[in-house]
Image 1 (cartoon, helix red, strand yellow):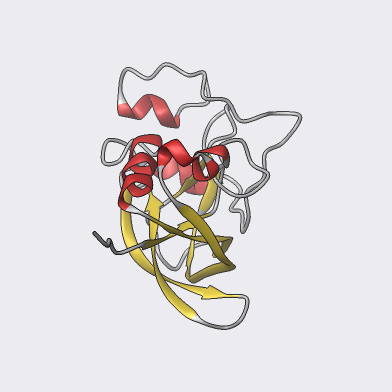
Image 2 (tube, rainbow, N blue to C red; image 1 turned 90 degrees about the vertical axis):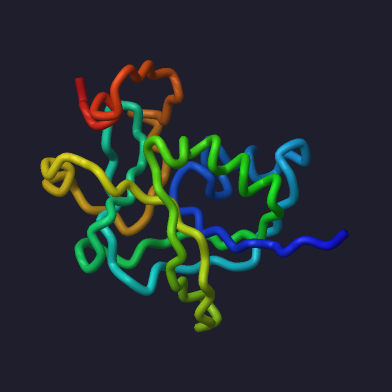
Length: 154
C-alpha cells in the first residue's frame, strides 16, 4: 500500500538543531526526510510570543519578512504527529503556502500559523528566522487553561 507524502515547511523549534527537531527524526512518529532549505514566498510576521521562547507565525500575509526554514517530506503518521505537537487546530492552523528553495524551486508546503492572536503580537520584534536563545531557552513547561494564555508574557 502506497501513500502520498506531504511537504511541510518548518521555521521554528522543529528545524535541525532546535529543541523539537527530535519529533522529525523519531521513527515512532513516522517518516520524514529533509528536502531543502527555503523561505516563504510571502512575507509573514514571525515573533517570539512568550517568555518560553515559543515562535509564532502570525497569519498576516504581507507583513514581516520572508521566513527562513526547512522543507520536509513526511508520511501521514508524521503529519498527524506534527498536528499533535502544534496543537492543531486548537492553537495553530495550517495551510498550503509556496516555499522558495535555495535552488530557486517553488514547492507547495504545509505551514503552521496562528490565525487568532491579539493585535499586540504585531508590536513584537519581527524575525526572519528563529533560533533557540540560551539566555531565554524554549520550554514546553507551561500550563494553558485558555487559548489567550498562550500569548501572555506573564
